[in-house]
Image (cartoon, rainbow, N blue to C red):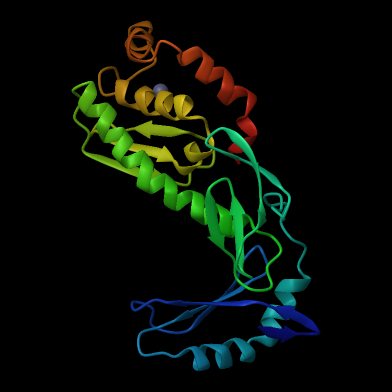
Length: 223
Ligand SMILES: [Zn+2]
């Protein structure tokens, strides 16, 4: 914890063997993030952050960008299409939602960063194998599946067979997640949105209109 003009600023240390020097960043949730380079130490990183007092104070005074809403204890989020509450976990720096536990840095009230990191991890672990499974089922060749933080789209497919999926699909019901994956996979057959393309989609995902309607209703998930 740093004390900057009477304000407690939580600190997060990140070791980056490829970093050449100490780097300080103030995360949108108010945590000071200090990168420790190869051969560096946490004590030196803290001393470095302390020397940047003035810079941190200036950042804290800046008006916060109209960023994503704060997620607090009791905030309701969507997880696998179900509403669930963020609650206190068993440990002092733990929060729970559905069957998940996430760790939060001490002193943090906005849980968004910690929860989203957990959701992102789950998305990588689940979306990639699911895509490969559906590709195999429909005898399509995928060269690569990547899970990304896309601002405005749920997925994309390149002519080279690379499929990118938005990690927020972990927040949608499984049938919506599958629809998006199938939507992208069908682009391997038809690289457009022609009538022929939509017939391919309907063949493999007869309920796709219900999924589209769900996405329309919940478009606020993307930001
Ligand atoms: Zn499309």
